[in-house]
Length: 116
Length: 114
Image 1 (tube, rainbow over the protein chains, first blue to last red):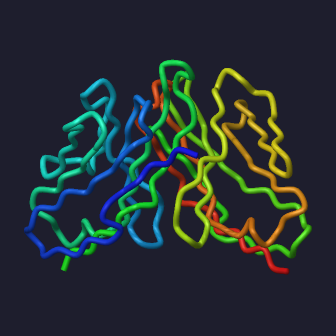
Image 2 (image 1 turned 30 degrees about the vertical axis):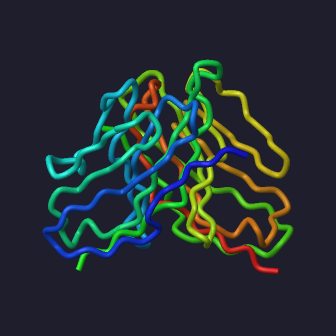
């Protein structure tokens, strides 16, 4: 069964450093998402991406965040200068094909980001 | 404002009991999607259902059923004959019809005891 993969599974970084979280969505999917979940809290939407551009972003997704789909397979989330409050689990998701339309969302296993 | 409320923080049941997880939403959109996701103790997120606001028919999938009531802005989720493997946090969510932006509830932790 196709799956969304994310690397690394755990990233530890120092405050102020840049991090790049990587995701490989399901190959024929068209819609891509990043979410985050602070430990023990609810899932929060960060950004949606379609047709090589951001469709929508949340208030959390400020100028410190950016997304890219550099090579048609990877979908990356960059945090330019990490803060302690960026510590969370980051989930990537993808959905939708030309045949199925919006379809079902498939989530990756998540990257746990710890900012010290 | 867009908002999803899951008032039940935690529910404990004994195996084989039926359990209903409540979800109430607010939206200014006339058309939208509603979702349920499961997050088992292992931490991954699992999509369970997407429901279009046009379609108020209840849905059943095995032991799972969903009751969508637009008049009360609710999208409740019932597990029949619960099993220990149903133990998880369940999130209800709302999105626009283009699936561009999502709003999640705070989740309900379901404990199913043997």
